[in-house]
Image (cartoon, rainbow, N blue to C red):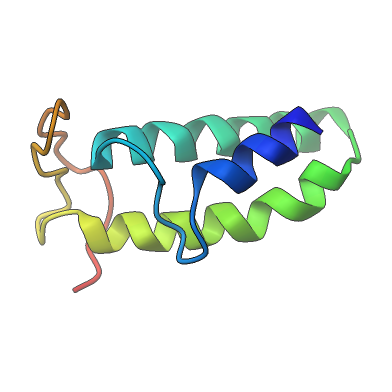
Length: 90
């Protein structure tokens, strides 16, 4: 239930992180993807495993819109420039 609450509060309906910068958006996506992966690896079935994947898919698409055309993260706020962070969607 805590993971479900967290993923629902972290991203808005368009898939964008509700707080902080593009770097934190990427960090949150990676964390939730890791949990989804571990649950799958361990054969854990849960409501989180049903609810989170579509949210993370939308968040990944939103992230691809946020990165520069070369795929790097723009240095907004306290985010550093991370090269090759994602394939850009213009």
